[in-house]
Length: 492
Image (spheres, rainbow, N blue to C red):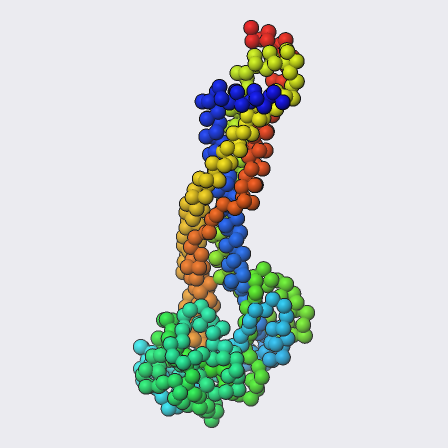
């Protein structure tokens, strides 16, 4: 194997060219390694986000189908169609909750009520004159029971308040006492807002009395078990309707909210939100749910993984960019190295002619050139493992910042163009859901945890060796196919 010695002597004799090839190869390896590590970090962050956020699926009435049914039934009547909502039975809700991939679930029931022995928080534009308007036009109250009615309070029935939207997204926070718990089902307890409590000198342990907005004979005495603080500014309609003021929202067990709505709502809920263990399992969960006995002609499952999609969007863009870097740098690096090696080999025609003339085999000559560039590749991979990590961190996080900023700008534009403001019943409408979905991810992942792993180095080593062999072999073939006599004659 004298060609190995010749390779070492040649590299030592031509230090300038060897150093040039080493610098170029190191730069190529650094960029390739950066792309690989960024991809790995993006994949790990995406998986972490998917596991932590999970995504959710909501079981609720299919309003479009219900409206079409109402229109069909009243097509021959004189009056306009009236929408009525079919509540979800607890049996149906629990049958779906028993399926795989459900991490937790929560019930939601909305009702309207009036304050009996305390004062609600008046909206800033509420006046005596506007009371009549509020009474006639307020979109609150229980529908299907005589039309629109006036209400002081929004009552949110829930299985656990921690899983309620306002609490889970950080908009509301318990500041005294506790929240609604699953064990509170069947009890008359409540969690009220801090401002409402302060205005009425209410504390944990006190009791309040409320009455149904649709049936004043239906009253409840609620024990205050917790006080929460909200950061919600409410919707534009909250300026005109007191029950839409976020300070006038109280949380109770879903059973208490059903009592306000009437006997027809016993053992039912308006909607159920199922939190997934992994956003990747949403489709499988929906497919399994559709095989249950739940009537999906009446109800629908609404998948909501906006938080996950918004969070991983910038990460996936960064990963895609890093993947393109790997491809582009590898191909361009192979071409550049091949050209450099080709020029180097052309200058060594006479050396090859002499060696072939004295009987040296052609494969050993090719082996010499390959050995030279492989040695350089090994050194370059070693150097890139040292310098690649800090460069990858800077490059990856800059890309993530750019993608996050671009995503936030796009989101802001779409929100401004789309329907805004919170919906009724405490501001949990579509506008708020969109806002929540797009406001959290930018805070959740602001940087990638980029670290060079042995797997990255091994992949880089494989890519580097492939590039080195291809770069040395291709130009060698064009020279080695010549006869020694022709090489030496042309050289003379």
